[in-house]
Image (tube, rainbow, N blue to C red; front, side, top):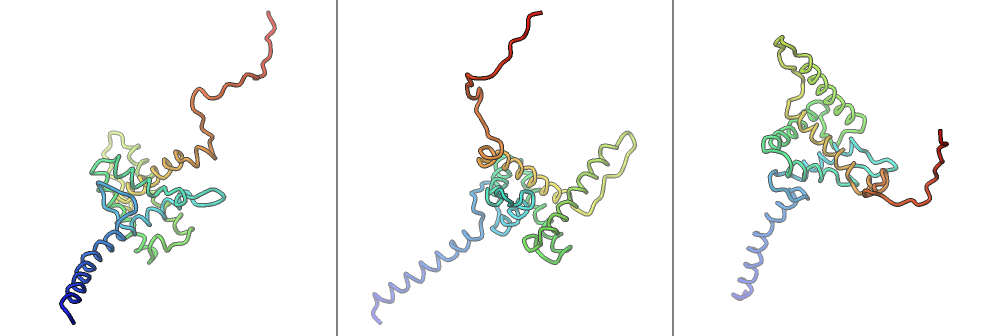
Length: 199
């Protein structure tokens, strides 16, 4: 084998070795460009499934069709404080762990009934916690202790709030569900009216 062929093959091997880690790293990262939080594709899919459980596809598009999970991630990345972003990431980890412990599956593998039951249980615990905090008068009551961590409940509430926010501000919602018109709206010259009788 001559020297030119060896050098050419060696260059291809080195170039391929340098390119492979970059390819696998891109696949592991989220589709949406984020500055403050690191999200993997698996975590992005989890948020997509949670959003889809809130707004499922029926005769109208679901959360994943409208890419609301990407909206959730962008809002968390751009609009929340560092502590809230950290709580979101920690809560997402707790969420995945609790689902695995309770059902022996990931959230993505659960059927719709179990997904809804799990999310409703988190919602119920959050409301019970709020009610316990509201009843606090002058009597020192120990903080409400539930089976879900505060970070998990924060993750749940952030995903729910931003999914609904994204849906109600989406182009689909504004053009098909609530037809939005800019103020002052259109001029209607032929509006019917009745003359009032003088007293």
